[in-house]
Length: 499
Image (cartoon, rainbow, N blue to C red):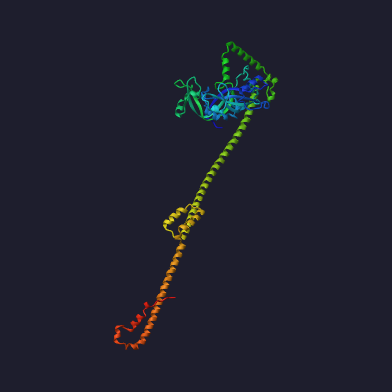
């Protein structure tokens, strides 16, 4: 179990739920006082339980030890009182009950408060607890507690609840001499100033006062854990029951004190006459045997039984604590593994996301290149054309691209490679046809020229015999017969048609 650096004790008067079997009037009165805080216990069926209620401490108000808990800390820890043990005089080996409920009540009136109402309180209010005493553990103690609710009993307000708290740190509160409510105080939270003034605290042997006449108190903060309640006749704090009992004793006259002393002496004499007898079982104590048993015998038996019950309880608590620690360790281990797996899963998801993103970008790039290649194959594009088209088709899906292709087939019809190739082929055919025609015409012209030449040569051969007979005068008209016929058969005289 963790050892706390600091401990403090708060106390208050115990309020039992008196059974009707003991006193029906006291039972009604006790129920009216603690009905809002008593645990929901069926006392008719659980006759071995004695329900009780009490104020564990007063929030926002210092106790006689010079310690105080503020409202904020009180609201954080009040539920931690539940299930804590009740023992005798803070002896953890003498456990006689447990706490079952926790709440709030008005300071001075014990009127129930809600948690919301308590949270708004600047002044003092009670942290009120409810629990049960195990009568089987100490029936004598249960009787005394029930008697403490009877104003006519000598045990009235005799039993008080003293609660022990463990905590890890503290602040200081400075108040005027006669003020105990911290709403009027000055709070000191700086470590250096706390160290300087700590020797003045009552908890550390000081008188609780400063040089300026004001009182200094210790404010419980940080980790605060209820450690257990002790039923006591000498509480450390200012408790109504003990204070009233003490005041009455101080008012006794000398004669009354003498009478009281004589009574005590008589009791001692009578006790010496009681026959010693051992007790083996709780059933051994009866109205008959009580006259034969000494107080020490009963006390020893009760102590023995309580020690047995405490040992058993401690054993069970240890086993539960060990099981809880084991479960906590396992839970922490599983949580650590879960966190590691979560981190690894996150990394894998991030890596997959990057791969998917890269794959999408790669596919988009491939599709873009395919589309540009397709358009380049279909159209004779300039660099300006490619820049405009690339910007248009970059984010297109298949349907949009198909529509875009239809649009380009109209806008770029003049740049369609197939149309251009066809036009060039037709032009080439026309050129070749024209060249063929010219060649034919030239060939025909040569044939005619050749034929004319042959005719002329033939005529010339026939005319050689006649050439000599030609008069000299005729040479003036024509220089030669050849020229004459060549002129007569000139190509420009013929209209040649090739078929």
